[in-house]
Length: 229
Length: 335
Image (cartoon, rainbow over all chains, first blue to last red; front, side, top):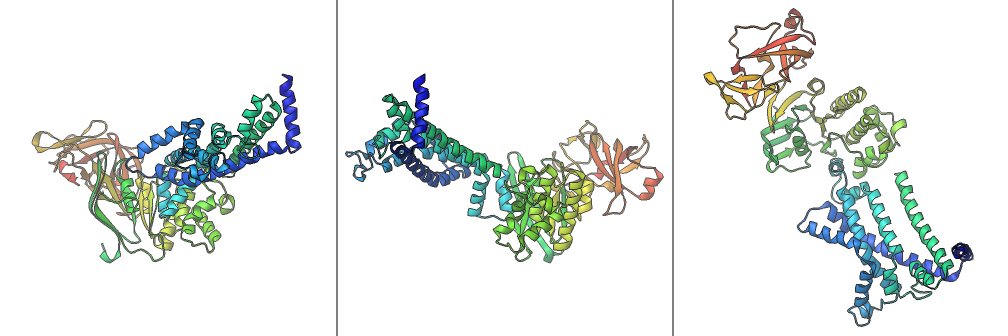
């Protein structure tokens, strides 16, 4: 077990010395996950609100599909997106394969059902008195929607955190679409997979610690906002 | 009723949920009036308030809201078990004014609204919604409506499940709204004695109908025919009540309190078909008639009876006293 202890020790050395390769993977991960979660929230929040708030024909079917997509395997998303953006695919001309933008696109497909489904659940779980209260206090139109979203803000924040966790921790998409290219598309998770395969535990452990720290920071931010109310 | 002063006009209203139907052929409320609505659970009080609050459109008929004070919120509703927005007390109370973009002297207005419901602004203004007791939440919710100075304020069971202080604060706030802003009030409550202290008129509701005004007693059906053209309905303890022929078997009978004779001992030979043994639960001066109003529990329900002060003294009527209620079958009329 000495190699593990040595791995931890070397991990701290890599982090505190600002090892360029390690920080390149961290940077790529933050860029990809931030872009994919931002796009997913921008599109998923309004769609999730509509799915949870309004009744319309086919709502239950759409809900069933969205909920099913929560369990979408990353390699399946990777496969489908790969097929579309490869040179021979319909979107081959966009040059997305082995690029950060390609990984972002695939992660959005992975993460947006989580945002939609959990936002819809948050809105559906709102106290039934909320709408009547807001309206009887004079709110109309978009103000009713914004106030309803604000009342569900903790559950929606939790949805965002869950979606971010899925994006930052996935490995299948980053490996298949990004190609794990050093200094370019290599992310924390693909680097860990690669380094572990090579028996280089130090960098794997260092990146694993960073991943855990990011997860902890995001969750702590949620707890902080909850406490502040 | 002065037609120029009507604020609400309801015509041929019909609203159904499952087996329940609210049906109001015609009903109007004057501006500045305080109306009480009383009736058992499921009688349609809350449904009527939601229609008056314009939260729902009736399936049939129309509701006209007239005589709105310019620049005010037309109508607002304080629901039974009100919901507080997940934000501090200040933001809850200020919410409606912020929507109207009426933010001048906002802090002072919030302070005044909190004082109207007897909450100390210094103590409560910045409390979180989850740091309030049930009674305090009720008062904050009421302050959120008061600050809007609405033309019509609808209150659904505002003193159900609250402590005495909150009940008093709500009563005072209601009087303030009426006196200072001329607000029209429609208030539902099971507590008839409280309702009479804060309203000008009380309407009784039963099974989706407005069955009568004032202190009338409501006797629901079903009615089954007996001998001598009499019809009976059963009270909760299975005691039978006799009435003349109802229009329909499930009609609701109205028994005016003035029609009930009170006796302090059982009278055997009397022509009246209905005799109930009961206990005086409450007695107080009826503000509408000036008589003494008795709330008598008999056969599992409360009957309202009006007697003169002289009769009450003569019979030594006090809460807890056993009495007999006597009334003719023909005293029951039909809603």
